Length: 150
Image 1 (cartoon, helix red, strand yellow):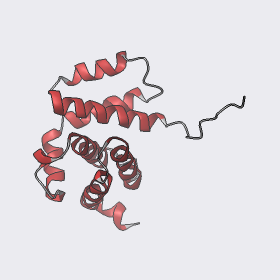
Image 2 (tube, helix red, strand yellow):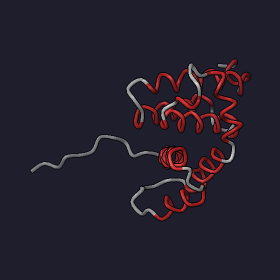
Image 3 (cartoon, one colour):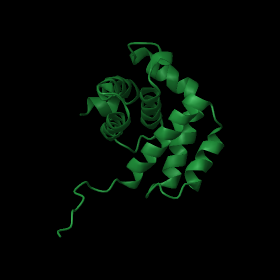
Image 4 (spheres, one colour):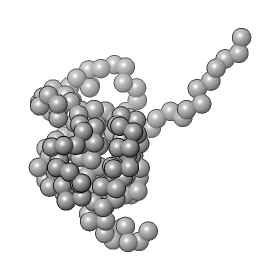
């Protein structure tokens, strides 16, 4: 019997951290649960695979501690009120906005690509296109010099 090999590349620790942070923001959005409790549940779970704990914590805490500011940043680029975003779109956009604003060492194109991949994995059929458009406009605003240099 021949062995079946998984041809999908292993996820990077940072990508896995983004997935977990997105799920944490999603959980917070639906339940209003405390950040510390969400973070602790993630840390207690043993089957999550390899992820960057510090990056995960920064994304989760940074995003949830700045929801008002991040909401104000994305709102002008939306085609509907923030309250009408799906929980996945909301979570992905908030993480993307946080990374664009607070992680200048990560190229904006990498951030947008990572968030689009999250939207494809967890969101609706065309949600990734919406996320791409919103974050592209936000990047032009927050990282004008970097975007102009492309």
